[in-house]
Image 1 (cartoon, rainbow, N blue to C red):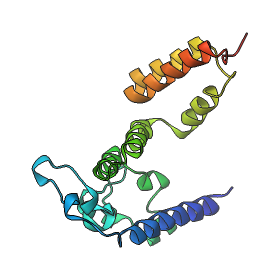
Image 2 (spheres, one colour; image 1 turned 120 degrees about the vertical axis):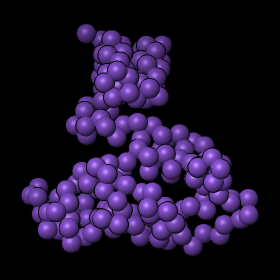
Image 3 (tube, rainbow, N blue to C red; image 1 turned 90 degrees about the horizontal axis):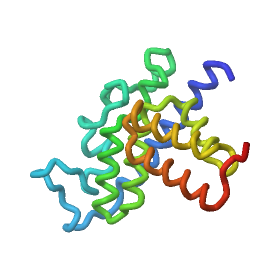
Length: 176
């Protein structure tokens, strides 16, 4: 796949996400969903973040949302790294989810935020290693230690350790 095709796909994904956020903006907000400014927590009144609090939304490289322009993507001034979400933005999204009692979604968003600094290639390797019969227990423990020590992914590393134990109990580990 050439660079132009990759850029086109990235732009299409960003535009699709922006359109989905815009469609969600028409949601009715109840009085129970008012913002709690004393704790600096975000709730559903701040959703979509890109419209309600764009000054707090940054990319992983520190670009403000207002600095991300389609023409800059197309002419190469912005790279794909500049379009990646920051852990802080993921945390704000998690707080929105919690404010509407979507705790499972909030947990998923926080785990995703933990994994932002893990390179994509390594994430795919870990994903494949977590499939049944692909890894030994020690290999899974090593992955958990890597997530914990190298990337500070404490929640995700705990999940990998749990998977190693469950795979052992259910005889789903690779047999050498």
